Image 1: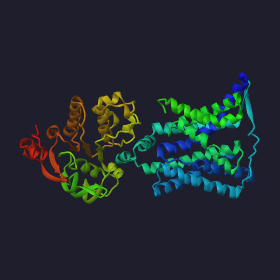
Image 2 (image 1 turned 90 degrees about the vertical axis):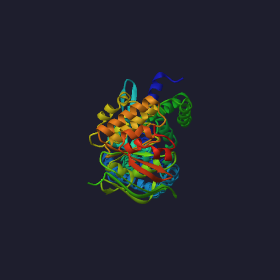
Image 3 (image 1 turned 180 degrees about the vertical axis):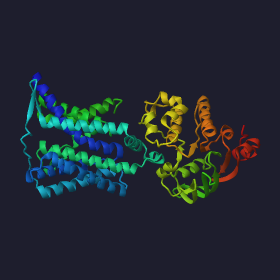
Image 4 (image 1 turned 30 degrees about the vertical axis):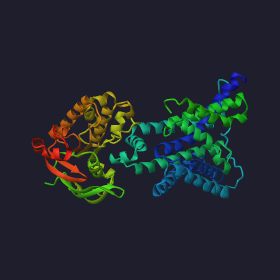
Amino acid sequence: MPSATLLGQALISGVLAGGMYGLLALGLSLSWGLLRLVNLSHFALAFLAAYLTYELGTTYHVAPWWAAAMIVPVMFLIGLAQHWLFDRFKVNELASLLITFSFAVILEVAIQLYWTADYRRFETHYSTMSIKVGGFYIPVLELVLCMVAGLLAWGTWLWLRKTYVGKALRAAAEDADIAAAYGVDHKKLAYLLSGMGAAYAAIAGTFIALIATLAPTQIWAWLGVVFAVVIIGRLGNPLGALLAGMLIGASESIAMAVFEPAWAPVVSFSVLIAILLWDPEWL
Amino acid sequence: MADLLSVENLSAGYGRAVVLFDVAFRLGEGEALAVLGRNGVGKTTLLDTLVGVTRRFTGSIALAGREVGTLAPEMRAVLGVGWVPQERNIFRSLSVEENLTAVARPGPWTIERVFGLFPRLKERAQQSGGSLSGGEQQMLAIGRALATNPRLLLLDEPTEGLAPIIVQELLGALTRLLREEKLAAIIVEQHAQKILPITQRALILERGRIVHQSDSAALLADPAPLERFLGVTGR
C-alpha cells in the first residue's frame, strides 16, 4: 500500500488532470444534452485549436492567451457553420455521430498534412512550474486550467438556470415542438449553443497545446474517458461534467498509485458502469 | 371593427389525410367559443391547425386582421396565440416557475398573477414539472399559456381525466379568465354542460365539418342540436 503522501499527491494530480476531462466534456455535454447532437468533431476542433496555439506560439511567438483570444472567436464561427450543415440536412442524434466522426477524420488528415504525424511539444517556461502546499506539489498550469474550467462550467450552469435564453434552451431540449408553439425560437438558440460548444473546444485546445504532446492521432486519446465523463455528469449539465471529470481523474490517478499505471484506462469505464448499475436519482 | 379571429374555408389534417373540411367561423375580441363534438370529429385538429402544428391544405386564418395561416408556430405564438394542448406537455425537467419564465413575454400576465390565479402553483414553484399531479399540470399548462400574454387562448379539453374537485377549481379559474379578464378563448370540450355557461358562442363539429353554430345561451335553451350530434341532453 502506498504512503499517505503518495496517495494525497495522486489525489491532487488526479483532480487537476480531471479538470481537462471536464473542460473537454463541457462542450460535448451541451450539444448532446441540449441539441441531441453527439459531436465527435469536438475533439478534432480542440486539437485544431491546440495546433494553432502551437503554431502561433512557436512560429510567431504569440503568447497562448493572445492565441486563444484569436482562435476562440474563429471556432465560434466554425461551430455556427457546422450547425448550419446539421440544420440544412436535418441531422438526427444517430446520424450526428457518424457525420461528426467523418468531420473529425477529415480534420485529423488535414492536421497531419500540415503539421505531419510527428510529435510536437510547445515548450514554455511555465509548463513545468508548480507550487508547494503542505508537502504536496501543485502544477500551476493545471491549476489555472481547473480555475478556467470551473468558471466556464459555473457560468454556463448559471446561464442555463437563470437566464431566459438558458431556460428556453432547456425547454426546447425537452420538447422542441411544444417550445416552438410557445414562441421559443429554438433554431437560433441551437446556433448559439453550437458556437459556444466549438468555442469551449478552442479553450480546451489552448490548454492541450500547453500540457500535452501533440500528434494527430492523439485526437482520439481522450474520446472514451470524456464520453464516460459526459454521461456521469448528466447530459447538458456543465457543473456535472466538470465534477465527473475530476472524479474520473482522481480515480485514475489513485488506481495508478495503488495498482499500476496500466490500470488507468479501465477506471473510467468501471466507474461509469458502477454508477449506471447504482442508478442514482441524479443520473 | 375587425374580428379577433376569422377562419375561412379551412381544410387541414396530417400528412395526406384531410381531417377538417371547409371550416369557417369568427370570434370577436373578448369572446369565448365552445367547440363541441364527439370523439374523433376533428376538435383537436382544429386547435392544432390554429396553432400551426398540422398540415393546412386550403383556407385562411386571420388573427386581428393579419393572415397567420402560413406562419410557423413560434411566429403565431409571438402574435398572440396561446395554446393549452390536450396532453398538457409541460416541461417536466424544468421547475414550475421555469416552465412559466422560459416562455414568458411582457404584458399584463406576470408570473405573480399566474400564481394568484393558481395558488397551488406558487406552493410548488421550485418543484419539477414532472412531479405535479394531473390537475396541477393542467393548471401549469394554462398558466404557461397565460405567461405568453396571448390575445387568444386555445384550450383542449382542459378538464379531461381530472378529479371532480379539481375540475371545479379549473372551471372557476376559467370563468374568471373569460368573464372578468375578458380573455378571448376557444375551448374544446366533450361535455357541453361544463362550458356552455361560460362561453358566448358555440359550434359543433361532425366528421370534420361544422354542423351547427349559435350563441351558447341558445344551445342551452334548446339542446336539440346537442342531442342530435352529441347524443346527450346537455344537462
